[in-house]
Image 1 (cartoon, rainbow, N blue to C red):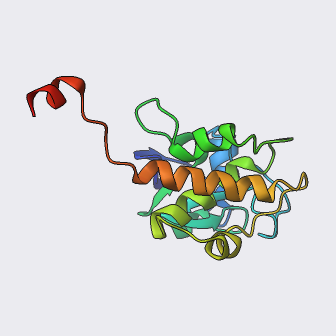
Image 2 (image 1 turned 180 degrees about the vertical axis):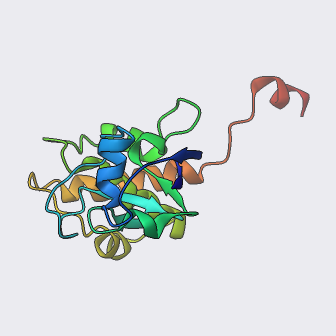
Amino acid sequence: MELQVNGKAVQVEADPAIPLLWVLREVLELTGTKYGCGVAACGACTVRVDGLPVRSCVVPVSSVRNRKIQTIEGLGAGGKPHALQTAWIAEQVPQCGYCQSGMLMAAAALLERKPRPTDADIDEAMSNLCRCGTYQRVRAAIHRAAAGMRKPPAIPPAVKAQA
């Protein structure tokens, strides 16, 4: 079957009932998406499907044909980290790091939907579990990324001089 993963069409041979997580990790070798609980409770396996956060451990691969799948490997663009990835580092969010790819994917979906999220918006959207308890840092990083994504592009000095 054909899947659209991180902007590329890929052919996979897999049982249609196998969870998307295992196709990503074992067939496509995209190991940034993690297995946590296997019952969609923890969020370590969160990816985006058509922009929405999805717990890939319970989604049959057949249900995502012809849909845009984005994993943590596809979050940044052009070799540059996404604003969330930069904010994650600046706010020192990762501790053990296991839940981070799922957290980042859920946060990316949130910012796409709500570019100026409130604390309540973040708390509602971020249902991922973090055993290290970095929830306050996650919230701060999301606010930092949102602010950075809203800034207008800088005007190059040469253009300023002409104005």
